Amino acid sequence: MTGKKLRNLVIICGDQLDHYSIAFDGFDPERDAVLMTEAAHEASYVWQSKRRIAFFFAAMRHFRDAQRREGRTVLYNAIDDENPPDTLANGLKAAIAQHDPEHLIVVQPGDWRVLSDLQSAAGETGLPLTVLEDAHFYTSIADFENFSEGRKRFILEDFYRMMRKRTGLLMADGKPVGGEWNYDKENRKSFGKKGPGLITPRAHYQPDPVTLDVLRLVEKHFANAPGTLEEFGEPVTRADALHALADFIDNRLRDFGTHQDAMWAGSSTLNHARISGVINLKLISPREAVNAAIAAYDSGAAPLNAVEGFVRQILGWREYIRGIYWTRMPEYADLNGLNAQRDIPGFFWTGETDMACLSDMLTRLLRTGYAHHIERLMGMGLFLLMYGAKPYATHDWHMGLYLDAIDWVSLPNMAGMSQHADGGIVGTKPYCATGAYIDRMSNYCESCRFDPKQSTGDNACPFTTLYWDFLARHEDAFNTNQRMFLQVRNLRRKEAGEVRAIRQQAENLRFP
Ligand SMILES: Cc1cc2nc3c(=O)[nH]c(=O)nc-3n(C[C@H](O)[C@H](O)[C@H](O)COP(=O)(O)OP(=O)(O)OC[C@H]3O[C@@H](n4cnc5c(N)ncnc54)[C@H](O)[C@@H]3O)c2cc1C
Ligand code: SF4
Image (cartoon, protein in one colour):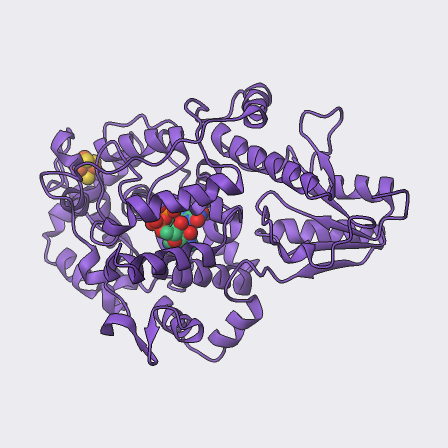
């Protein structure tokens, strides 16, 4: 930029590190500039882990440097500057005051709150703000609204089939490749007694000087945040993110499908991709991930059940969840269909519990910022649901600890799918189960002091106790849900005295 008046100020948020962003269409390095802000508020409005903060800031700084190498001016507010702005809105107002742009541009942010803060800040300064639809996704929000309009219920499966037809992905002559839309039935196997065997571990990305600086400043500015920065090896550049995708496609995709739902003590990655963090920061695109998986199928390197399973997660679930968020916010955040009112149990921040499953999952989550889907849904989320934690608090907790949590994706998954707060928009029934599910899908119960079959007594598994208590608390409501009918019938087969004892044990669990 040379002494001329600034034309466009392009705002790039921490989860918009898209090298091919639509925000750069028509960008003129002579007249335009990029604004990025490491805002203390964004790192602390929910209590966040050191790892999550470091992941975002390290990726942002690498993106800044890459943009500067491209010849773009980047106005960058670093958290360790003297008097840095505390919020994105204040960062924007300061940049406007200093550089006097004619026009502001932002791509639709990943958080309703951020969008409304930026719009207010722009409004206060009287500058026009253009909000661009995010071309990173396959569907626009308007598209999603059109698809869902007039439908009483718009479930994932309807959306996914429509997306397959629309994109032609995994389709041949208008029909799904292989004859089936989904291969879920083949994808629910446990590892059995032998365990997962040898799986190529996920690559470690050695921190470079930029990342090391971030790790130091996070230790200094966020000393009391949960989690640890030890062994930080996250991909934080586009090159690393592309490598992480290729590492999954080459080494784990083949077995991703069959054991997609399986859990095993000591490992979360197993055959999963572990790319949600970099895809949500937009270092890589969903198209790159989907195309790479389909190319592996085409070359015979991965079977259809694995590839279709993976494509469904991205082309189906990821897009669907985003559509639900943007077409239902801000009311969605307040939904609490099961009227759950408890705080998150303290051990969810430390992993200190006798429950072998939760102790392992939570300790690992604090160390890595990652857990796979079933650990989230049928481990940690399941416990919080049946315990009766406030849905928005479960989302806050999730936002704090997971590297891939952004408001648009965490809220409908955590509060909606996992806590059933939306009363059935994302999932038609609550995902609830006894400890027997965890026993069947993992090796946790072998080393646990509790017994998944028992619901009362000293050895009762807390999941099993809370399951029956959960059904009893919501018996009338669940009895009208066809998909819950059998579970309610099993509850009704129990003696009144047994149910009373279970409910007392559940109360003791909540108030030890
Ligand atoms: C309670 C709960 C909370 C969740 N919160 C988040 C979240 O904050 N951020 C997030 O990215 N995912 C979330 N998910 C979805 C899913 O668990 C993660 O995307 C996945 O575990 C990430 O790991 P992976 O990259 O190894 O994914 P894989 O299991 O290998 O799947 C491939 C990709 O599919 C996409 N995907 C799969 N399922 C979903 C989904 N339900 N919603 C959106 N994308 C999906 C992700 O981009 C993921 O990287 C949540 C799921 C549950 C049950
Ligand atoms: S017995 Fe219950 S608490 Fe223990 S590992 Fe199994 S499911 Fe978890």
